[in-house]
Image (cartoon, rainbow, N blue to C red; front, side):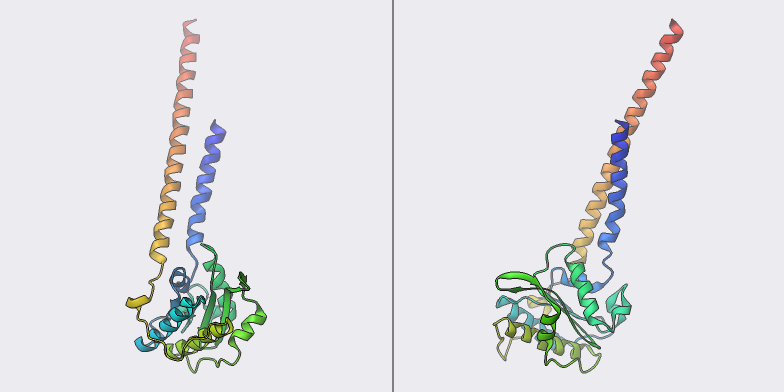
Length: 240
């Protein structure tokens, strides 16, 4: 029984230790894109309200046609959290961001990363009725003819993203109309999912802590009973 209790204690400690790495995905964009479709860059490279609304409108129009896309606008190193070294390599960051998003559920959309140095695409897309990874050859096709951002400003990043989303929809056989109504955050945007994931992490921490306490309590009860039996046995030996 003691071995069983010790095994439970070890498992509890291991589970508790694994909670923080699972939550620490290291960059803000993954919190936005877990449930949303746009990370609009940080305050260092803000996107104007009008241009952001245009991009959200294009994303909504594509999603309604069965072509969901997730976009991360990376204006600077502050948007990359623990990975500032990836600022000049948007494709590497797109791959990393896609892998982070798949930690919680299967990714069902391409992930487009636009930074001042270029465009990266990761994630999955639906082709032939199946959900498949975006390959290197497919990435080249999706960005062919799309010019890089005109500068590091948020509006320049967003305008490039609009072109990429339109091209993805066109290549999927669902070209978007020339005129698309803008969508504000209040009308159709989504807030980051970090709060919900933090709550889930704390619930897991609480559950592991409760399991740890219960295991310790069982261990203590067993130890007390064993001590009492040994005391009673010793008293019996004295009486004899």
